[in-house]
Length: 70
Image 1 (cartoon, rainbow, N blue to C red):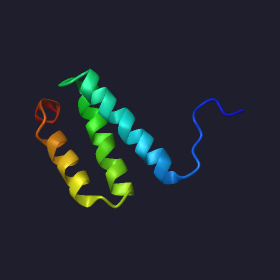
Image 2: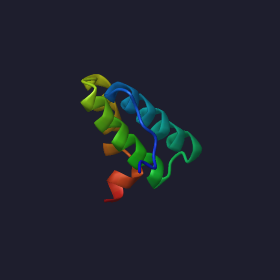
Image 3: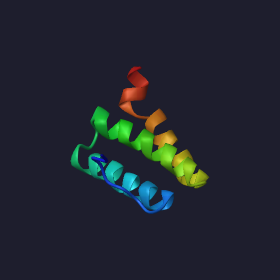
Image 4: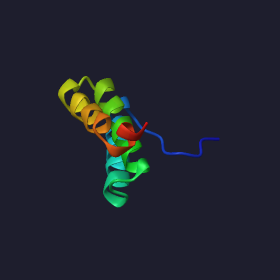
């Protein structure tokens, strides 16, 4: 039995993932959770062949306090 959401297309699933990652970033700005959500967002952009958006997300994470401390 499927317990999570189902999607008709991969694009629909990706768009929902991006929306949810942005919600985490908005709700918990500057936290580790928000930074990791931004990292995951970059991966979704790569999957969608949106290289500029992916590059920006990965650059944001690379320059974050979390990355600088690690």
